[in-house]
Length: 59
Image (cartoon, helix red, strand yellow):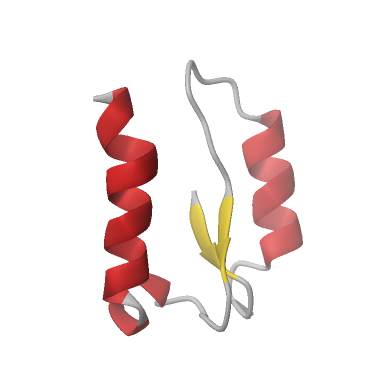
């Protein structure tokens, strides 16, 4: 889960608890500093970096 640290629609604390409670073979929770709900659109380079570092190896 990649989450903006300033997201008011999906608060990071609630999302962090959701990820912690989720059962999955691989999971990760990354906060994107200075980003809100649309972090992937506002910070596409950082989002791509996270996708390549966290998701690609799992595939």
